[in-house]
Length: 490
Image (cartoon, rainbow, N blue to C red):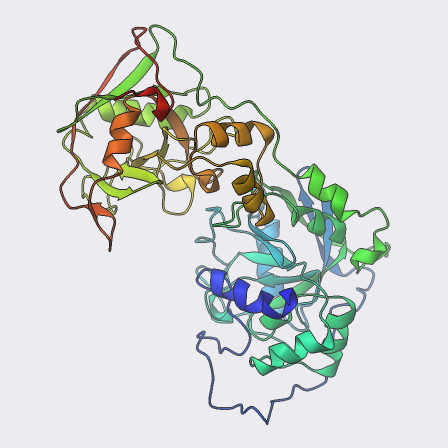
């Protein structure tokens, strides 16, 4: 059942930024006019070239991935000349060096090549985008290298993906055909024996194939990722992508060629480190804090800051507060049992700026998580788009059963994180994607009171403005610390 629904699920989830399903044209529209239930289209039964060996001296790509190993790719200029030329020239320029795999989906693919690191950036050697086309000799078998696009091969750029996929039975392929996919007999044979992502065929430019290091790709697909974005919690970085030549070394096309590969052991080794969580470390006397007075609310919200883990984020918040930037602004978005968000001078989530020339990348640190009372920057898809907008977490508490349910869905928790989320509550699915830089140590009752205001259901904006009267920077004087909402006796 999983394989029969995987194409529909993945394509529905991520079509907007990278993929569309087979049965669609290059503009992403479903063609319902050319195929009937009784007359399926057929594909020419050409030879599939993915597993044809390179000749000695042929150009290959050698990709060194930090902490994982090296992956080598055979290229196919005879079927994807522009795609190969683009990748080779970008590699020669060092374009990919230091970039990360920003999207990883187990049993599907790993995607990288975006200098912004969030799936929205990248360009080709000709500037902008190019049309790499498709060729029936190259398909999406396990280990295939292809360009991500925004609805057609005419939007190819620098972003690429490497297929992992899974094996398909005849029944699985028949089910895909009934949904509009078209496969040749040769393609079907490979998808049954080798596996891959067959529903992508015909919509993406395949231009290479892994000839060694497929185990590295399969190791990466087991990393812990944020379930909303499929972004790894810990960056998976391309240290270098170099252009070389094939010298006749052994070729290992299939994951079964790697005797040492054990997916169960790999999964255990790619979890998050069980670092100590710092959200609830008390401020010391004289330490810089921020106090926020809200119009109509008695208790100020006092925030401990963590410059040791979020230096730029703390600096930005302090300097904006000193300038009076936040005074008079509203909390424009309030969602009960989730968070309250403010800091936008436009008051609708579209504005704001940092103290730096542009938005800044505040990064993330595993010592700070989205526990109740955490203060973090809102962003537009990555921490590189941090500005002035921030939110304060309310969330809810997670018992052992709920945490187990989240783990069964693919979320990953360290033991220390489990302890915090069960004791204090929070929003664990945000971890790793937003810059946490502070924690409320007094006035959390005010935050929880705000989350109960009446809002417009269409945009979560309070019907009556929740106004930041003032935000001041001062030194902690040793006053009371109340981390948990249960500490506030009414």
